[in-house]
Length: 397
Ligand SMILES: *Cc1c(COP(=O)(O)O)cnc(C)c1O
Image (cartoon, rainbow, N blue to C red; front, side):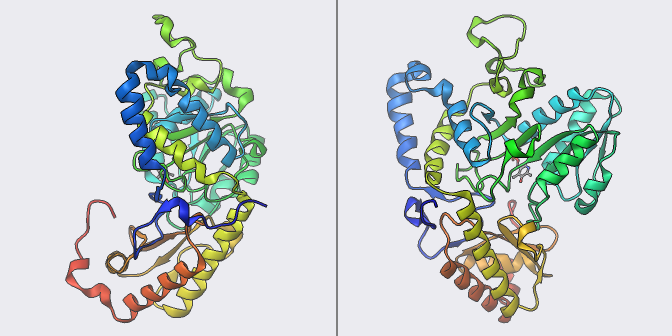
């Protein structure tokens, strides 16, 4: 048994807002601003360059990585933090391809987040050795894992529909066919229980600004299975992944640990804020979190389905195959979401016609969810979405 959920007192949530977008950008933890000020004024301001040692800045990527590791079932020392998720996808994929030099197929799926696919396309172009990216429908992926496949690279929970792949079964299939497995946990870390060690997958990557509340631009993470790390060839062989960065050797020699997946100078301000944000997870049992998440999402589905027959559920109905978000398809989704946001219920829109709602049990309860469904019903019934101010699209949707 973990601490009771939600823990709303740990977060700053604006008055009148029901926030159903923690799957895109988590809310502000109350300790974040004070921690950032402390790092700026005391550590940077007073200690200056000395802070790399005395304030523990150089170790921060590993320390924060270990805390994230606890949330995803990864052993100590197996998670590095830094850069952005797109970069970590590139690193994992490049390393994985090196592990299967006689194979030429990267298998993903057509529900994957575009950046993951774009990074694969860029890497294929850079290597220029005839690699091919295959993207079947998510439900066909398991069947598409053949002995031609070098790497299976999948996002565990689909960013649009919330559909969740069976991590254990797909990893087993990949290994049976001799392929390397990479999981993207962008919508899993802090959203559902994850057992990286138990899955036996070689790599995982993820970001920390979604369910982990690390703030905009917070660093990403990368996991490598401990027994393979010494054979992982870093494609981005920056000095901080070197075995002895301050020896200033002319040749690259990777660190003998997950540190080799570091690249350059870590983003200390963001890491410090993330470290503070991760305190909200102290004492949280991930099975409790999952139960709370399903209670919230099942309640939302029940309420919205009953109140808004115009909307079509675009997420799996079976909760065991769904992450911590629920999506509805609707012809006027963009405008309806703008109308909803104007009324204090914040979700988001994903092209072409999806209204997406994330459920974050750390700071949401059933009352919030029912209220959100009532406001959504009002927007749909009164056709409030037809107002001209909701029709023009912003840069970020
Ligand atoms: C959010 C997300 C990203 C974003 O990558 P960044 O480099 O952090 O901008 C990438 N992949 C997936 C699957 C995501 O959900």
